[in-house]
Image 1 (spheres, rainbow, N blue to C red):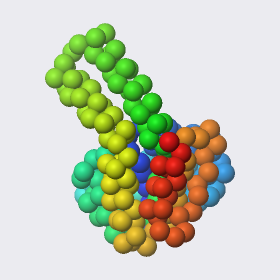
Image 2: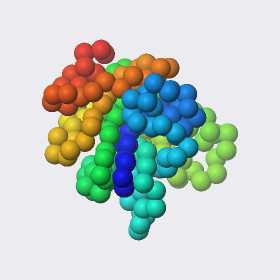
Image 3: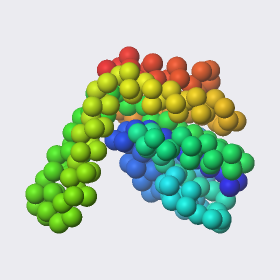
Length: 192
């Protein structure tokens, strides 16, 4: 890969929302900051889809990874090693924002289950996963551990790193991580 942009954050931090804004050209200032001149020339995918490919045809890739997934650090490390130029954008919502967004997902998935109870085992597992994530969202120590694993990975690779306060996603601004990236998580915790 010539160029790789990784949007990272826990579930409900706004990764898909941000990717859709980029894809549809709704945040030109951020695109310019990240070097995305034409979103249509970039391939949008997930880390897992990218890892399943035997060969990568695209030279410009934007992917997102859910920091709640335990395998993601290993996969992301492999991607960082395979890219000539990598930019990471870590979404940093407050724990309160994560919890509120996740509660909406729980309500939505539960309503969907009762409206259409096909594939009940899969849907119940998904709802249980959302409840498990809710316990992480409200536990600052566990949340800090997740972010620190990610930031430790970034420190071992030559990447250009940014963070976005994903409480404010209308006009997202990427803030460079200049010093110790894990200092950014303190920013997240101080706003709760």
